Each structure stands twice: as structure tokens, then as C-alpha cells.
Image (tube, rainbow, N blue to C red):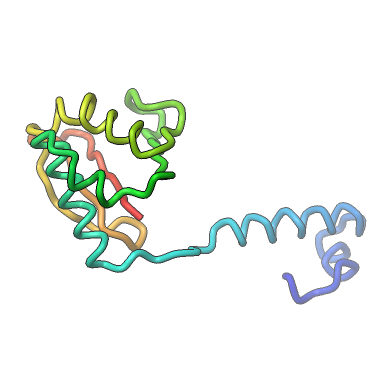
Length: 140
């Protein structure tokens, strides 16, 4: 679509050219936003997941703290099915406090696996009871 003129695209979509330009502009923005800009090496993903597991299960956040960037962000998407953070947590201290004070309470009940999720390692896979909702974290 991006190699076709606005006039031709507008004719095909049966719309005016001004509206077509806006539609193409929005489409380009969505395509750009969806591109992967950085791929974390697999070894680094494994290192982060191991440190995350140690922090959640054992409450030991030192190793995780050393690996996280100062401007780290934590976003939660529950799909509206379970309670979750509404706002993005920003900064190492906020993320570590959440891991230590909130996630650590359930850490011992989780079955730790590392499946692939959207091309990256993820974990844990969910609570240790059958048919429970899966909880995944992806670290980049």
C-alpha cells in the first residue's frame, strides 16, 4: 500500500485523497510502532529471568537491581480478567518495591517455566494448581 500513490489508493478505497493521506499516515505510524527496535540476547533474557525469580521467590532483589536500568518501566496487562496495576511503574526503585512487596507474596506458589512469548523468554508460567490462569512476564 505504501508504494501506491495517494490518488490510486483513494480511488481503490473509494474515498477522497485528503482522507486517504490521513489513513496512510496513521497506518505508517502503526507499522512503525509495531516494529521491534531492540532484541535482547537470549543469554541476557535468561540472566534477567533468573534474577527475577530469585527476587519474587526469595525476596532477594540485589541481583535484579544490578541488572535493571535506572529508567526501567513495568507494565501489566491482565486483559481485564484479574486485578492488575493500572499505571506503569517507572524507575528501578518503584519496580523493585513492587517485586519485593507484592509479587514476593505469591512467589512460592508459582511454577517457574520459561516459555517463549512473542519471540522472547518469559516466566513464570502460573500458580501451582491445575487450570489456573497463566501469569507471564517478559523481560526485554
